[in-house]
Image (cartoon, rainbow, N blue to C red):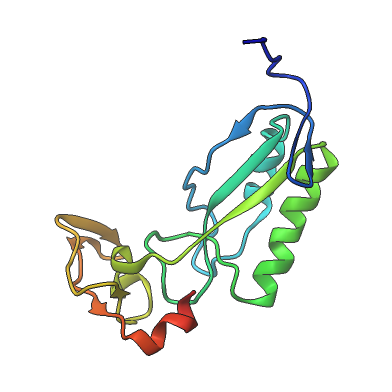
Amino acid sequence: MPSVNLFSPVKIGSIQLANRIFMAPLTRTRAGPSHLPNALMTEYYTQRASAGLIVSESSMLLSNTSAFMGEPGLYEPGQLTAWKAVTDAVHAKGSKIFSQIWHAGRAAHPDINGGAESVSASAIAIEGTTHTFTGKVPHAVPRALASDEIPTII
């Protein structure tokens, strides 16, 4: 098998990458209670923009579905604008960035989501505790998602 240089360009689909180094998503929880990407996040991703591809930390697509305090969102116009500052800075360094989008499901807790009920595929809680604004608490039992609710989440 021929050897491939890790630093050589590669095209994946229609995306041309400067090299074959990828940065996996890492949950940073630096967005604060507004779930807005900020200057610290822009600096963090820009510092790592020598990778051919960065996959961002998990970003919520719906409000009140956070599993972590300070997790960024992608569900309000202001959040999209703030993410654009991050992506523009990464692109200026020659790298590409993909967003890891998600719904926390049963990992979401009402205590960090304004009291909103957690929903999941089934009404089974995660074993153990989670960290909330008031400290560690047991994971909440989510409500099983109804079939007609699926289109609002996916």
